[in-house]
Each structure stands twice: as C-alpha cells, then as structure tokens.
Length: 234
Length: 103
Image 1 (cartoon, rainbow over the protein chains, first blue to last red):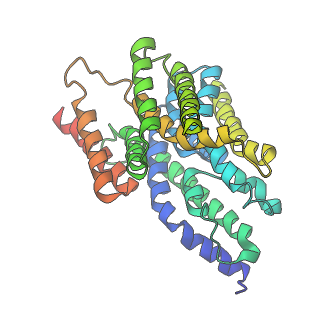
Image 2 (tube, rainbow over the protein chains, first blue to last red):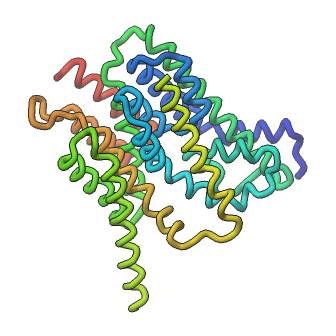
C-alpha cells in the first residue's frame, strides 16, 4: 500500500499518542522542579530542546542546583545515559537509509521513542524512516511543551507544589519495578541498588555517585567473566 | 554562565552516546558491549533510586516515612496496573499530601 506523506505523518502521530500524556506530565514536573531550583522557562526550554533525555534532565536539575563540577556532570551524564549506546546499537541497521532525517532521529532516540520504534514495524516500508522521523519529532514536541508549561504554570498554580520533586523518585522506582517484573535475572538491579547504598554510606551524599558507577561496572564485568567461564565448563 | 556550561556538557555527552554506535558499529557488535547493554540499564536505575533518596533523614523524625510510604505505593501501583504514568502520578500525589498535611 502506497501512502501519501500526509497519511504517514498522521500514522506517526497516532503511534506517538501513548507517549503524549506521559511526556507532557513528566515535562511539567521537570519544568516546575527547574523553576523551584531558580531557573525559569528559557532554561527549561533549552534543556528540553538540546538534551532531550527525560531522566537525565531530572538528574540535571540536582546537578545544576547542587553546584556539581564539570567532571561530575560528564561522568553522571555518561552513566545515566549509557543505556542510549545500546538503543543506538540496536537501531544501526534500521536507520541505515534514513538520509537527511538520520541525524535528528539519532539525536531524538529516547527511551520512549525507542520503545515505540524498536520492533521495526512501519505502516509503509518505502517511507519507513520518514515515519520514524515524525514519531521522534512528535515525542520531542510533547516533551518541550510539557517543560515550558511546567515552568510557566509552576509560578501560578493555586496549590502548593511542595513534594513535586518526588516525581523523579517515583519515575525511577516505577522503572525499577517494571524491569524487575519483566526480567528473571535480578542480579544487575540488586548490584545497582546495593553498591550505591554502600557507597552512599561510605563516601557521603556529595561523593558517592562516581565510586558507585565504577563499582557497578566492575562487578557486572566480573560477573560476566564468571558466567562465561561457567558456560565454558558446561 | 556556569549553568549554560553544565547544560552544554549534558547535551554534548548525551549526543555522543547516541551517535557513537552509528559511527563505530556498522554491522557487528562486540559481545562484551551487548552484555553491558543487557545488564547496565537495570543496575543504573537501581543506582538512581538510591540517588533520589540520598537526602532523606533516616535517623530523625519522621524517619523517612513519607518517602517509604509513597515508594511502596509506586511499587504497588506498578505491580497492579503495569502503567508507569499511573504509578508516578499516584506516588507523587500521595507524597505531596503526606508532607503537606500529615508530617
């Protein structure tokens, strides 16, 4: 079936609908948080346009408000967003022929965009990447819209927003629970949780993140060696 | 100025992570990298959960009760409905009510 470009954009919009509510609400939470930290709509807009990574932007608010160093910012971004390496790895083949759309599609490959596009299904094989480009663009539009709304609404909401910062915690606890429910091997999740808790106790609230990241990577690498040795024996 | 630099760093590092595989891997992905791809995401989410709770005062009243109650609600909602949006909204609203009205 040959679809017109307009029909493909419409299909992309329908595909993106499940992400719309989530991105607008999480974006509003982010905008409010950033405003509460003392940075208004221009900052919310530029972070959502140029970074476009939900959890990283939430963590970014703490980095900015907490006066993080450049090194901490680089390492934290690397660790929080390392998973994007793997999203990209699995899209290398699919995005191969995307041409002029490719740079933006790679830039906009968030968790949610990935979850919509990773099965490789498209309404029209001929214009597959045109469709994927529009799904990515719709998603970023919701995210930017939410962030700006949050930043503007935060100042005039008729009720206290004290405690809204828990939305970030809730986001990660929900992801953690979801991953726990959808996988059998809970060792990586427990490694992350326990190593970080121990590092927090040993190094204190200002210095625990980097040792935690190093120890997590080290433990998981060692576990792999043990696993592959075990497999070699069998 | 300092904030612009931090935002630029986050933007550039995030882009680097997203673009690197398209530049480095054309066809085959080394097994160690694809192993990390499987295990790192859930470990990092675990790390971020602790990161978010780092400033909770566990040793003085209310001993982290609002956080623990709201966190339990998020876990419960997620198990029940498997919808992250409902869990996040529910947990956040409960936390806001707890700290504004109860504790």
